[in-house]
Each structure stands twice: as structure tokens, then as C-alpha cells.
Length: 607
Image (cartoon, rainbow, N blue to C red; front, side, top):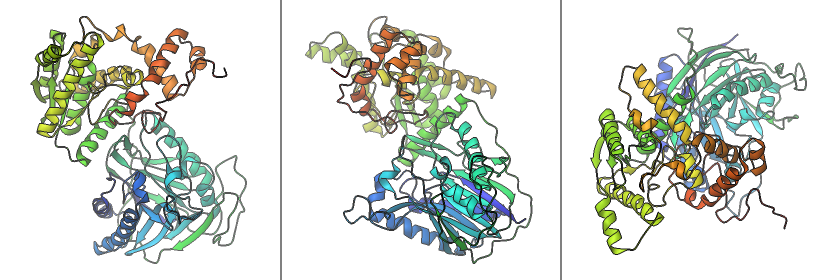
């Protein structure tokens, strides 16, 4: 059986940085070649970054992607890497954008994969399955491909596929089995959400069985606006054996030697018990289509791969981590890349002494270093002594730049000129704090971090243009109960490593409070967070209705109240800062609801 040393390049790209992304391909290919790799696979849209959203409509952007691919092929050969096959994602086009009046059905923008070898673009493939759910809008942007590309490489038939192709049965993987390939390479930009790694392995096993072939699954790592990509690349045999698996949230090369069947024109036996039987032998398939709806385009690589000189290479299987560790890594990487890719030098946030600001500060310090984090205590006449002490203690433990800006004189100046009372005075305090943070941002160039969690955003428990002020929110998709879990985990992790826990214990155990009036605590306005978060998870993440939530055991009156709060707060959420997605349904790209909306759960709609 032919041997093939495969390197899965689990690496970070930046949307729009086409030269930088191409340079990264050259760098990682060189590193892989030094380890003896013969085939290196990069993530989906590696050349352009992902997701490119409406950039795909610009002819200039698509042309830059296409030109970069040609240049990259030549540059790799000039680097002495012409005998290493490189699979890389990019955006291609065989027709006008769908917004163009000249657009024709079956042509347009393409989410594409290319195999580069010998200084040339040997083969290309257009993604077949286009996701149009959750954060994905690919039907808006791309035309689906209808032909599977199979490249004969080093005596092995290798099929090219892209991301969503692995998430759906039929189509490219069924065609790969019909084509008798030995290896399916699936390049991905699959965003992180909690427990998604538990879904991927069974999924890849199913597709490997369907194709009757080994599957090499490579995923991107890094942050892009609200999305973060966790890697978790792997190789699985047709029999379902996990050969190697990368870690999460790490940039790395996963290098592994594969023993693969020699190329032939015989269909693979399917490992999928529910699949229809395939013919045992077929003629070269060319472009003929079968029940999977795919034609097959066969390409023979004209350049020989560099020989294996040592071995064997074994990639190993990375250890899985806890939910809290997984989420913490997602939040720190998401913030790090948002800061770095957008050119911010530093961040600033309000330190109240409470749990939310403490966790955000710890995330920021882990993400970009304490020397780039400014924490500002902004006490009012209602701020407790322990809150001020807890904020100062956190700053001492983490080493961030700590400042104090008392707000009471500024609040008093407003009240001397305006007659305000009750909630207006409470919100005034929050807005004065927002003004201070934005002033520091303007003066010193910091990115303002807001610290509201998903539970508060859901029910509108925040002050618009006050504590919601900020350019990025690390906790936007983190429920309050998970905030506490993360704080405890981070402290325990520090202790396990022999370091000092960053978050003061008092910030974790004291009742949460906005401290905008005497004796205020969150429970004055909201139910216990354990109860609240369970209702919110059903309504927001699970799309459960009023009756479903009551059937699940929740109090009917409380359900009515919480659902009304969630619905009425849509206008606030529409104006909120972006933040890293960690759940199956985050506010923003995942959950799109009208602001003006009279539909209410639990009320009759037929009268």
C-alpha cells in the first residue's frame, strides 16, 4: 500500500489579509516539509480568511484571491517546495455575483479548494453543501459545486471537499466512495461552540464509513469578530479508527503517516449499513452522475511528491479538556484576535469588584498581558467598601494598570442642573461611568470592554449607553451561572499550576449587585440565576415556547415575566457590542428577531 505523510495545518488566518495569509501558507508548508510532509492541507478560505461576508460581492476582492492563488503556487516552487502538495481554501468565481443583474443560474462566487504542486494549480473543487443556518449565510454568497475533484497523487486517489460537505450525508462523500478514493481531505472553517468537539468525531466517522475511505479533517483556529475557531483537526479511517487528533485553540501541524490503498477505478465498499450497495468495479467515471448528484472529475498530478526519508510520523491524540477550560480558551483567543487583528494597543474596563468585571479582567490579562489592560474603579456614593477593596485586590493579583475615578462629583453636577429621581438617577451613574471609559479610550487609544453577561443581555438588565458601553464584550454569550463556574475554574487552575488565583474569593461568593441604590442586589429585580438561566436556555438556545417551558416545570407567571423581558430588550441587544460566541445560539448572527414585534408567547394570536 502507498504511504503518504500528511500534515494538517491547523492555523490562524485574517479576513482580508490576503498577502499575510499567503505568507502563512508558505511558512507552515516549509515547516511541514522539514518534517517530511508530502501533502499539507490548510483550512477553508485560508487565502482570504473566513467568513468574508459581503466582501464576496466585490470583483476586486475575488480577483485578488484568484491572483494570490496563482502567485502562491509559483512562490511555493521558488521556495523549493514544489514537490509538496498543498491544499488550500480560497474564493473563486465563474460568473458575476448574485447581486449583479448579469448573474446566471449555476455560476457565480465559489467557496473553493485548490491543490498546488510543481508551481501549478493542479486541481480545484467547489464546495457542494452550502450551510444556511445559525451563523452561516452561504446560500446568499456562493453557488454550489456539482462535481467531486479526485487527484491521483503519489499513487493514491485523493478527493477534495470543503467543510459543510462533511456535515451532510450524500453528495461529495457518497461520490468519493463511488470513485474509489483512498483519502478524502476535508478543509474547514468550523466555528466553536461548547461540546462541538463531541459531535465532530462521530460525524467524521460517519462520513469516512460513507466514503469507505480515510478522512483527513483540518479546521481553522483563531478569532474573527464574534466567531472563534477551535481547530480539533483529526484523521479517521474508513473503519472508524481515530488515528490522530489535534488540540483545541492551538496553532499546530498535525503530521501523520498514512498507509492508503493504491489508486484504482473500483468503488469502495461502504461502511454505512444504510447505504445502497455500489458496483464492485466500474470504468473510469469521468463526469457521470449517480444518485449522489455529483459528477467526478479526475486529475493526475504531473509532478512527483518528495520521497519519504524517515518515519514513521505519528501525530498522537490530544487530551480533551473540561467545559470550563474549553470556554476560557475560546474567550481568551477570541479577545486576543479581536484586539490584535484590529490594531488595538490595549483595553480598558470598569472594575466594580463584582464577578463579571473580575472575570473579564482575568480573561483580558490572559489574552493580551497585564501591561496592556487598564482597570478603572469608578465608585459612587452607593459603592460598598468591599467592592472597592475587591477591585483593588484583583488588580494587585493580576498586575493590570489600576486607576480610580470617583463618579459622585460628576453625578452631583448633573443633579444640580437637572431634576432627576429614581431609575433616572441610577442610570445616570452608569452613564457617567460609560463617559469616563470612552474618554479614556479617546485619550489613550484603548478598546473599551463591556462586561455584561448573556443573562443580563437577555432580560435587558443593563443601562443603554452606560454599563453597555464598549467595543467588545467577552461575556456576551456567557450565562451568569457559567461566569461563576469560570471564575472558580480559573482560580483552581492557577492554584494547580502553583500560581495565585486572579479573582478574589469575595467577588465570587457575594450576592451580585449593580450598587446603584442603597442595599441593591440583583435578586431585587431578577429570580435566582439558576432559575433564570434555565428558562433563558430553553427560550433562546432551544427556541422553546411558553407552553414548552411550563411543561418543563417552570413557574407559569415567571415564564410570562421573563419572556416579556427578553422580547422587550431586543432593541438594546441590537446596539450591543460584539462578543465571542460559545453557545449553540448567540445573540446577533445566530438569533435574528425583529425589534418591532407584537407577537407574545402565551397570548392568543387568533383574535
